[in-house]
Length: 412
Image (cartoon, rainbow, N blue to C red; front, top):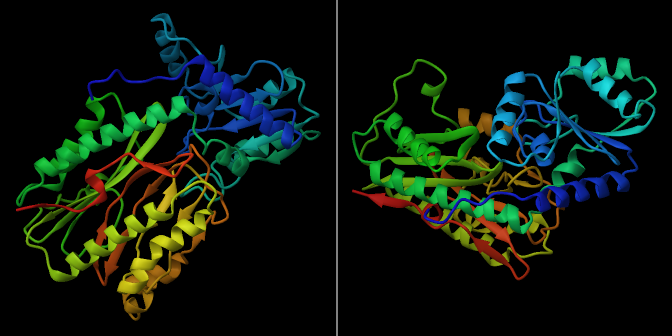
């Protein structure tokens, strides 16, 4: 962490804006409304290089307008600019409702145009039907009856999948921070330590490097038999954090974000000795990770990567609670329904059947500059092992950005 932290230049802004306008021309829209709101991907930041919990009106010609619900966000931005930080967008405004957006579109002459929209359709995990509020959009439609709106959510999300050299520098920096957080987790995890102590140590390591944790921030689960996932329940309810014990696995998903770009990892620490089935799951998860590395290269379909990572689980009779891999923003997610018959007649089996898992975005062709997390998880009954790190698709194959979280790490 000794090298100066990278940032993005105005050249990167111009590259992004050119790419967005090329997308607009392909879809024959004269203007683009990019919703960010409180959506996970913060898509307005792709244009503004800011986080406003708002939106952007981005014309094919002319300057964009950034809108936010909170004037404090505008003041925060101006304070940075006063310190010499170069803004990407000059026109910031307060007002995030349907009539305000309609007024900006009229002002720019696009109340009778074809206008693209980002945020109505599938965008990120947990936002399969978008994140633009119903009343907001109903007001926009009422205010602009002669505007033709075109949903470009999926197309925009796929555009941002391919990262520039400047963006990859930020992602590599975030990956180094993730690696440091994994080392801190390994150092602090011992029998008798509370989950909250481990959680706090990881978060502190991320924050002290000037990075953030993107929603859902930090998943952490512990125990010898625990297939649950997500943030600890004690972060949402008055429930005592668990103290970890000999024989446990302590597993985390760390959503490190730097400059708005995510470098997610899955770190697993085993408090030895662990049982034989956990050891078997550990070996299967690592074989799945290696299988993904062997096939990962530009030109293959995302489904081919998933199929390669499935093979070790299929052979070992393991099932997967969470995806085996995914792109780092909307694109492809490698859920798999393998070997669920072992859960027949159990509550966990009923949960998995309701989930109806399958690969999404399987026909996405991998291209140089795309970033993925290979996050294989292997379960036998209620024993589960989850590992993983970030991999970049390169011209010749792939580049691994993480080491510590790609294997289970053992402590006495």
